[in-house]
Each structure stands twice: as structure tokens, then as C-alpha cells.
Amino acid sequence: MTSTLDTCDDAKAARVVADFPILARPTARGKRLVYLDSAATSQKPLAVIAAIDEYYREYNANIHRGVYEIAERATATFEAAREKLARFVNADPREIVWTRNATEAINLVAYSWGSANLRRGDAILLSELEHHSNLVPWQLLAERTGASLRFIPVDDRGELVLDDLDALLRDCKLVALAHVSNTLGTILPLETIVPRARRAGAVVLIDGAQGAPHLRVDVAALDADFYAFSGHKMLGPTGIGVLYGKRALLEAMPPFLTGGDMIRRVEYARTSFNDLPWKFEAGTSNIAGAIGLAAAAEYLNALDLDWVRAHERALTGYALERLGELEPRGLALYGPRDPQRISGVLSFNFADIHAHDLASILDTEGVCIRAGHHCTMPLMEKMGWSATARASFYVYNTRADVDALVDGLAKAARIFKI
Amino acid sequence: MDDDFYRDYILDHYRNPRNFGHLEHPDASADDTNPLCGDRIAMELQLTDGRVSDVRFSGKGCAISQASASMLTESIRGKTLEEIAKLPKDVVLENVGIGISPTRMKCATLGLRVLKSAAIGRIAAWPDEE
Ligand SMILES: Cc1ncc(COP(=O)(O)O)c(C=O)c1O
Picture 1 (cartoon, each protein chain N blue to C red):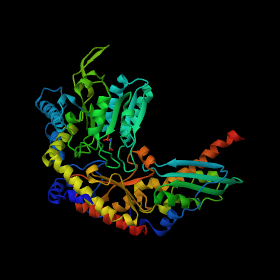
Picture 2: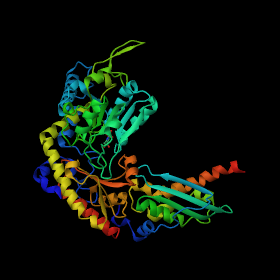
Picture 3: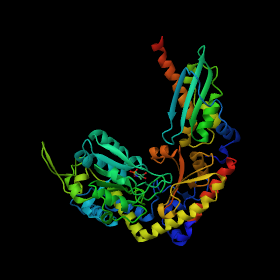
Picture 4: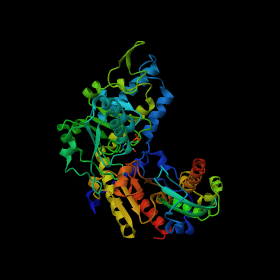
């Protein structure tokens, strides 16, 4: 198939593997850890672990308040982290709001922007492949405001069908789409949809949870109004995420959570709010998380996101080829079959072996994959799958990992006698 | 989980589930989903003189949840609803619980949970009917 497009850079990948301490630890059964669940959460390089460790050991203090040395250092490093994330997606630091994760970032927009701007009769346009995190907040917003939900359909290979896009965009106030499908790996055609949505007058939010870790993101070029992502899927720690928002929109939005740190002046009866981005950061932030995430962004920059993409594309091509060998024995591969169209995620089922049984058998070989509905239950229902097995790749995966997956599947076939 | 967990009888119950399907007029029924993995099981009971005289289950899911439910249906004929409501986890763990991980334990016990809620639901409904 198409794996000839890219050759796997296993040499560089091997150097990358050495940066991830967890990958050197064998499993309880003494197997090499073959981590193929990065779409759920990524592993962390030493550089990230060290940055968090350094903060707690050397300058742990609250930010924006203390005047003593370590507090100054904490504040400066925390705000420098914001600047690094701003550069990572080509934004202004004032447009970078720290959240807990992509889910909270999307909820921030749904509550703050959505409640203030949507009315009965307005439409919200999503796609049929959205993660629950980019669906449920809009369902609740629609309930609160009387707006309606519409969906861009997906075809049976998991590609968006744009034939009726103009009609779908009519009276549409908001378009909220994934950058990359976490279930099928489909890279959405944002360069087509976003300009048309903007011309139709809609505000555009991109759920970048699976985008920012794998693809070079330039929010200025993309021209989306909001871009939400999670640190833990891009080599950073859990509990920290980012909402990018265009400054004018963020300025006009009411606060989401309220309390300390997000205020300018508080009287008993009223309060005026802080400037961007702190207006949206109530309470003490995840300081270590922001510092760790900045270290992750720097690590990815040093790897070079073009290399990341090429490496994952090559690995996906190789995996499509190897998994294809099992098709005569009943392996069903879902999603686009073209590595150009997928970002390091492959969903499949194998004969009559349930995905959970596959995952359990692979686990005995040290191979970690995900099985289930991947938080996309409506998509699974539409496709008629009760569950799928999902392998997802990242910077530290090699062809040896793909081979281990295929060997594990062969073992499952032996156990289930197929 | 153990390598040898998927023993032949488990695969047999998975591929040829016993008492699979529906009853025409069930006296008690319930269904539930394992939200973790989407496994689904429904149980239907027929009662004669207060004891289970027939049972059917239906559902979709992994070998563990389906085989466990299938084996369970083979062991409950003749039991009263009170007895079913008090069935301990061991009845399914003896069949499929050996060597399975804590997460998969929820799959193994799904059928039992559904069966017990069918029984408990029916017991709770009695006073209204009389
Ligand atoms: C496409 C997509 N959107 C949103 C999320 C939610 O991410 P988080 O749980 O970090 O908020 C995920 C993660 O599973 C995802 O894959």
C-alpha cells in the first residue's frame, strides 16, 4: 500500500524512546511495554518530569501574589509557559487561557460565549464523529437556549460528507468540530470548512485534543475562533489544558468560573474582572502543570512537528500494511485507509473476538491498546459497531511496536481458534 | 489476566450461548449496560409457583460478560426471587472469575447484576399488585 510514501525513521524514534523512562520498565509479566494508547493519554519524557520536579523542589510558591524570590520565579516561569504555548500554536499569550483539559476549555466556551450569544432559532453545527466532550456541552447549551443541533454526516470510511455544507451552515451561529477523530484518526478538512463557516457568519471552535499533539497548529492561518486542547495527550501532565480564543471574542465574553485571581477589584456588592487571560482563570492554577506542558511543547518543537507527522504517517502506513495481512482471517479495519488522511489512530475488530478480549490478550504480551466506544457512542451506533479495538501511535512508537501488535493479534487468533 | 483464561468452555458459551433469546411473557426482567465498555445484557424470568421455571438472556459484549451470563442462566432454575436477590458474586466468579483483572471483573458480574435487579424489581413490585 502507501507506506512507500514515507520511510520509518526508526533510528530517531529509538533515540526518542530513550527519553521516556516508562518505556524502559518491563511489565509485571516481564514483557517490553508496547504503548499504543497515546490517543487516550501520552507518555511523558524526562524533560517534562524534570520541569515539574524542579518547580516543586526549587521554587514552589503561589503566583501573581508573593513578592519574595521563589514567588517571583514561579510567576515568571508560569507566564513564560503561557508564552511558549502561545508560540506553539502561533497565538498571542493573552489569547491562551489555562484550563484543566480540552473538555473544560469547550465547556468554558459553551457556558460563557454560548449562553450569552445563542438564542432560540440559532443552530449549532457539529459532525457525526465528535467525542462526547465536543457534543454533550452543546446539547446542554441547546437545551438552555432553545438552539438546535445539526451534524455534518460521515461516510462509512469516517470521512465528512460536505455536499450539503451550505445548507447546514444557514442560520448557524457556531460550528464545533474535531481537528482529528479520536476513534478513526480522520483528519478533518478544516481548511475547507472553516473559511466557509466564517463566511456564513458562524463562530468556529476546534476540538484540538487529537490535533495539537500530532499536527503543526497555526491558529492564525486556521482562522478558527477557538481551539481547545489537553496537555496530557501531547507529552505533558494531566490536569492542564488550553483554550485559545481570539482576543476580541474573549474580551467580550463574561467570566466562566469566578473567585480569586480573576478579579480586578472586589467590593461587597460588586466586582470588576481582571484582564485577559486571567479573567478566565479563577482560583490557583495548575502551576506545575503549565510548566510541565511548556516543557512538552519545547520537546515537541525540538523533535520538529514535521518529523512527528512524517514519522506517524510512515508508522500508520506500515501498520495498515501489517494489519492488512490479517484481513483474510477476519480483521476489519475502519476509517480512511490512506495514511495521508489519518493521524496515527487505527480502529479495528478481529473476527468474532470482542475488542475487550483482544485488549486483554494483547495486555498479556505487554501491548496496550484501547477497546470500547472511545467516547463516541453516537458514531459507534451509526456505524453499527458495539466496540472497536484502537491502536494509536506517537513519537516513541516504532515498527517493532506494530510487529508486537500483529504478533499479539495472532496469539488472540490462536486462543480463539480462528 | 492469565494467558490461559479463555478456556474452551468459556469460548463455547460465548459462541453458543445457552438460554439466549426472549420469553413470550416474562414475569420479571431487567437490562443494563457496562458503561465502561458498552457490554449489554438483558435477563427475562418466568415464574411458576414462585420459582424460576424458565429464563432467557440477550445481549452483546465480550466473551467474559456473555459466557458468564450464559453459565449463570444454567444454574438458576428452581430458585425463588429472594434466593436470586441474595446470590453472591462467587456464583459467577467460580465460572469465569479466576485470574481476571479488576476492570474485567465488571464484565464477569454484569449478568448477575442484571439478574438480581430483575428479581429485586419484581419483589418490590409485588405489594402494588396485590
Ligand atoms: C477528540 C477528543 N476531544 C476531546 C477529548 C477530551 O480530552 P480531555 O479528557 O483531556 O478533556 C478527547 C480525549 O479523549 C478527544 O480525543
